[in-house]
Length: 277
Image (tube, rainbow, N blue to C red; front, top):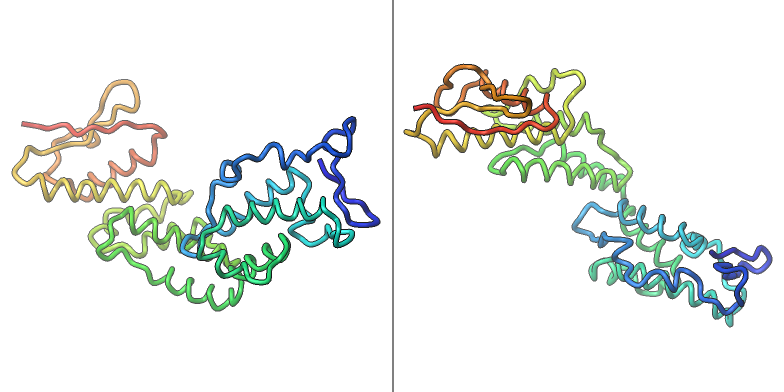
């Protein structure tokens, strides 16, 4: 690993204390592909700054190189070749894990890893209060509209992560309630009982329940004239129909509730569609 010399701020390789001072640092010998260690590409169009910076800090801490990005490890002189090697290595790591649109905005006049790291931080945090207000408004006013359930849930999830990036985190409780609030009346009426569950279902559980409702609606549209169907669970030993009776074509409010209850109650249920003649 590497230690910082308290008098000069210079990093000295101590990866192998029994070897000579010319032994390469582990950071140079163990990282052949930085993207295997940081599988996130920082982008202005994706809410991934916190994930990227977290992964990067973990890698930096692993090799005891934190001082190069927080500015506490300084070159002892203009001829400190070892410091410049480490700094160039970290700059290469940074530039290899950000998109061109980000690098184009932060490269100019940032001649060290610390300056580059700080420029990226500022890029994603400048005017964060104003950005948080705009994102909060969009989050609170987003409705499903013509989006699919998958698109709608992904949009709200992304907005919540954007808000987290500007230090205005959204709780999962608030995310779930907003997902339910933005639904059209025909879907909301079938899942409104979810908001009264204690504890409140998670975002992923609500998403799964809504996908089930969406699939039932699709089946009702394309299954007109087909035999009536009922939902069969084979999650335990033996099968049981969700209602015990023949369902009306397309399912009803009670049948949908029961199907969702199955989805939320059992950890690994298997559902099949069975047809009645």
